[in-house]
Length: 174
Image 1 (cartoon, rainbow, N blue to C red):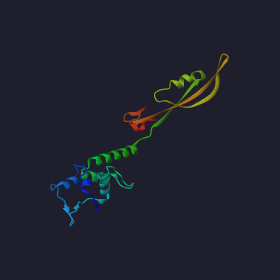
Image 2: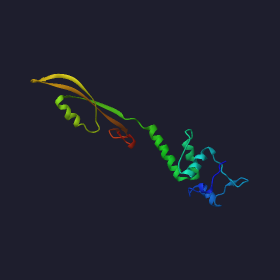
Image 3: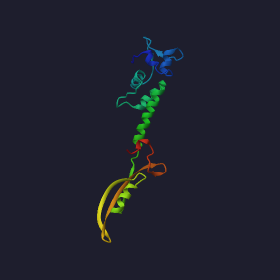
Image 4: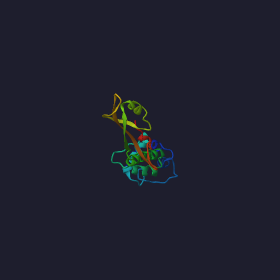
């Protein structure tokens, strides 16, 4: 049994509950005290009623959003339907999101080329590590130290293969 006010039930003008309170166009059984009898699962009515009271969806962690959505659709509470559908889409997206693949490149360069190579990296390539491999070449009287420069890039799955750009705004790297 739920107790509430007519004002709460009429918060959403197009809802079944508001129409029930406004007149005789919707018939519903009543008990001996005049309370409406609605044959629905009471488990999911609490969040519906609280949404009408406060305008916020608050669910216990074990409450199935799909059940509340079913009731919101039955009672025709549009704003609540949109909120739950958005939450379900977000949850579904999080579950199906594939983490990016990391691609690495190892570039060999001499000491004098190092600054230019690192400063001209583009297309999402990020500097990871620099390894000094010594000087194996001797040019005239100068020794040129050689380096291995490790760079990486994230690739995201897309419908047409791998892409270097995320397909959803939540995947954008900081």
